[in-house]
Image (spheres, rainbow, N blue to C red):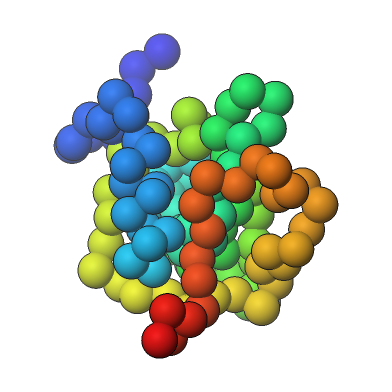
Length: 116
């Protein structure tokens, strides 16, 4: 199967990009299931031995959703991953106390000013 997307290849390990996006609260460009997306990564965690990121969908194929959308993405499925300079605020749909994150979280966003 040919990759229809031209340009930069995905790094062999996308995890550092996801981690930096979470720490710096910067959006990421990615292709997921052949859909161009801008994602605001909130938490990186493991499930069944694989890495997942829960993120707010900022846009899909250059269209901004009518309402806030928050989804789970398998890190291995994120192609052409690149950090942007676009900041994001923590999404109200993000529930850090969710049971699925218990004991599996590798990195999560923190409210601005939490370390003050």
